[in-house]
Image: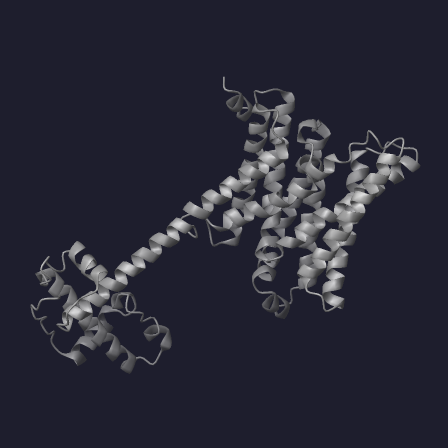
Length: 407
């Protein structure tokens, strides 16, 4: 069977199956937890968090070695990275609140300083007798192929708890993400919700370090929510869709890497996520580029159709080529520009609707109704048949459209 299909069906060996499952779980957790950070427009905070973990990893290794333990103990390294990330997050929050620095400037400062400090500590570790074989550089770009059962277990448990906590806090997080001022006025503690949001992102960052590294984990936190946003307008659906896109990216990326062992797994996972993003950007029916082009074309068609029919109703000549093409395509005028019976009927309807809207504005002072006039919304969608009949009574009988050439 094809190696890629074998990997997809978990038939490519124990390690490949373990990596695919672990990557899928991490991708789901990253996408779901990163949703509200993205909706809060604070995606760069995940970048600072990820880079702030590096000094903690190095310092945790040194401390464990000095205490006579195994410096490569995963739980110890993750605990060190969590503490370091928390300090980095606190510094970003403090600089934003207590100084005149903007958040992006604080993020840039923390990101660069912590990453530089981490590189220095890792260099020092390489000079230690016990540090040459530490393999801490794998936390930079990940070491998916070396995943053990305990690593997958940590991802499964930690990721599940993070997703569960995010789902339980989805309502206040949604409120804070879209309207923090209203959230504060309604009694929601915005600062605590922000801290909870960052804490959950930090948790996923820490448990994913071993798999894809501190640089690529950012992609799993941001790309899936951005991809999901193209498909839906509802935050709940974005949450689950982001988890699904992240899970698929992790699982399929790991399967591709297993079928071509020379390819780095973390990078392939990110490229799969990027492929889903590009596909969604182009073809998503809600916010995709293709949908936007089609909607714009439909809007343009409707505007030219209306303007052409109004010109026809006023017996004015039509010179605009696209308007003529629209009217001919719908059989409203002949090739020589003379209105057809259907065209005259539609023109009379459009002209009468304009007069109905004029009467409606005189009768109804409610801007909620008359404010819906945009020239394209049928009046039947705004007013009841009885109200339209009242408008017709004030207007009087319909006037026929003269069969005059349009061009």
